[in-house]
Amino acid sequence: MHFLRLSLWATAFCLSAFCFQAQSQTAMEVAENMYPGWNLGNTMEPGPCDWISNKLNYETAWQGSKTTQAIIDFVAKQGFRSVRIPCSWMVHCDANYNIDTKWMDRVQEIVDYCIKDSLYVVLNDHYDNGWIERSFANKTEASVSMNCTLLGMLWRQIATRFRDYDHHLLFAGMNEPDAAGDNSKDKSGDIATLIKYEQAFVNAVRQTGGNNAKRVLVVQSPSTSIDLAYQYDVMPTDATPDALMLEVHFYAPFNFSMMTKEESWGSPFYYWGAANHVEGSTHNATWGEESYIQSQLRQMRTKYSSKGIPVIMGEFGSLWRTMPAGENQEKHDASIYTWYKTLCKYAIHNGVIPFVWDTNNCQRPSMDIINRKTLTVFNPNALDGIMDGCADAVWYGTTDILLPSAHSSSTPLYDLSGRILSTPPSKGIFISDGKKWMKR
Image (cartoon, rainbow, N blue to C red; front, top):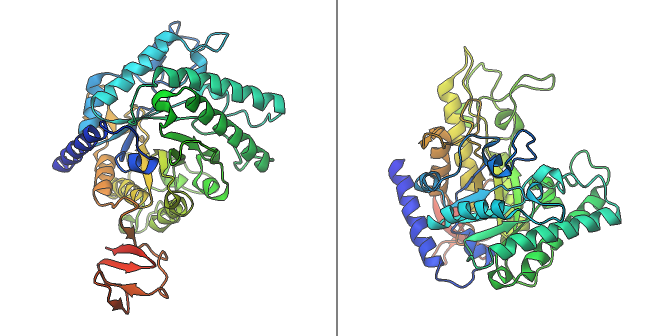
């Protein structure tokens, strides 16, 4: 595993070094070199924090480690190729919506740590006290117009500061806009509003010129839901062709990834994946396993990546737990490994870039991967799953991967020499419907 991570890191370094020489790249060209990604979670996003007088110290309000070059170096050496920086801006503005210069300087310093390691960076406007993410309950013309204006003001400042950075820096307009979710009573109105916000973000960045004229920008699906991304089209217009990505998040099945206690409607899942179920346990997964993940990610391939729009899975994770008496820790650990590997493998197959969520809490139950305080790997099961999933994957665009129900048996099959096949090979590559398919 260690050799694999170093190899991936070395490959990423070489690819990134080469890319720095290019003037601009399409979103798909950038995406192919970005996986896997890691989140600097719970770090640059806190606020407001009334118990902290100096807002620069918000950086350690929700986790205890100030970000250093050594931390980013350690992340890169594990094999990660990208860092997502969840960041607040509005809570660092004055009464005229000018972002505090010292805060901007600190964010830039962290971006530079990543660039020094040839990492890609996704810089967003995260929850930010919910000023726009939770605005969908009030969709009056005046409110939406004001939010578009403010979003544009923020992003013009951010984009101007980073205008000279090359394609290794991507901007993401928001985080998890609360649009068209289960509790929404006005889904069509939410979607129309979200599109206006996405458009305001794109317009603001493009107006600043320089490298921002062609920079890859990331817009968010409604509630960053895969299903809602498939159901609704929220892509804004952009004068720069092939320079947009879509963002979704993934924490499923909920019983396995986030559920911490028994409820009247169900139990936490400790064991995930067909090979990891424990006979007699009431905590085996009963939904949301391999075929579910594959079907979710195929939706992103069908609607976005197949049309030249790569998808960022900006956050994903599942709780690693200490098993109670009578349960099987080894099988649970294997479940964690399998979940992360499966998700990363099929994300990459379908043109989706996975960014693991990591908050530096490092106390189980936890989704955390890296202990920033000690510069050690906290959860090797998850990290190995991520890296093995990436190593076992084929990026979308070169070879399509034969998944259950993905290929029609009525479509003619050919081998690589053009000879007709009566059935798909048990293993290997064949041609059908003008595409290459791989069966493992």
